[in-house]
Length: 396
Image (cartoon, rainbow, N blue to C red):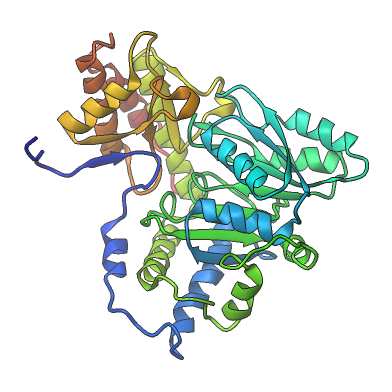
């Protein structure tokens, strides 16, 4: 196949597009990560990450890893083999976190709920109320389930735990939500916040980011799970003076420094408003223009970072995705696990605006038409345009 001219239009829900200024910041000579000057970079990054997590009480750690590595770090640093964990499964990533907990030797109580919905708050509260002996040591929740385009309300998870007066640790996956959807680590009493570099932070994949509350750090004193590479104790001792227990990715740290500068220049609240605005335009294209359905079952579950779009019965979403890539140089997210072949996903997070996102809507529309899906040409673009032209957010 011959080369397709022009850039690839990347609209998967991660990795996201990296701004030029961040790419340039990462093109640096290698340096001594034990030098007296290095802590200036490391300490500034770790301090400013706290602002993104909205925590003054918590401690932030970065690892050369992905969000999956941070799942493991959160579990093994705070729990002991055989400890009971409560979680819910409503997509591939919530499934994988539960699967990891089982493989690490924890007793996992999994609530299987309908894909297209999110964390079952009432069931969490009921189970926690019934756990009089407090055998459940951790409650897991995905703020944003990338597979299905579903967001859950973490404040409601905390309320369920408080209503049950339960002391379990609250662990939250924010990989596809942090810096894109509002998150409040201190206010919502989150003990372990798991994230990664390749989505809202607009960086390449490769940096795992973990926020831990004082309660989570205290739990480390009695946790007996084996850990080595992901040992937070080692990281704490070295981070205290601006160093790491092993070689960090220096370009990623410079990239994160510039990413944080970019985030603070726009303002977190403005970023959240922009993501909601862009997501509403995509939803208008899907529902009003194309007359299709989202995988998310109701507006309360709609994600502002990714939309999973159901193709009509009898059509293969995988063909829509492959055609979009091969013919139009457009990367759309694939359906995973239970929704493979049933949905394609448009990621609308990170460094993008209405005009850039319009290319994803137009390309997806063309690919659906190529595959015989009966959408009206131009309908998605028109619906998104109408929304975006009349609902632009005001900067705060």
